[in-house]
Length: 104
Image (cartoon, rainbow, N blue to C red; front, side, top):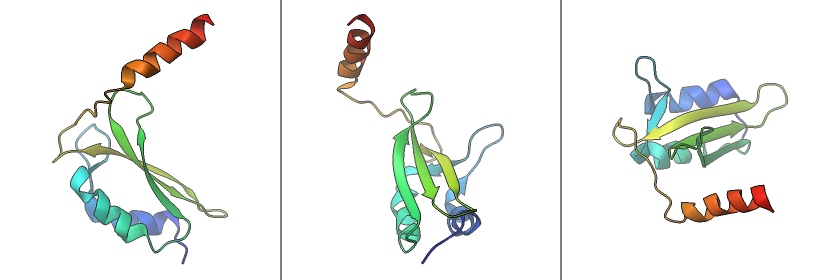
């Protein structure tokens, strides 16, 4: 079964929240439900990625592959409506690799 981007938006609308002058978000405890709702669709992928700003926050990325009506939905992940930084204990290794790439 395949879905369009509007069908996906309609299916998960009750789990998407927004605040005045801020991005739309999904609560982290709702992620398993969102994934389960979209699992029957063969052209929909749900993943978790770093934000585009790489500021320590995560996004829920929903990709819909379709001939004409595909696209990507990006929602910030929050914990009970509050922004939450996700700390990577090995992030210092990435920083060292960036500096190594710059000098070598």
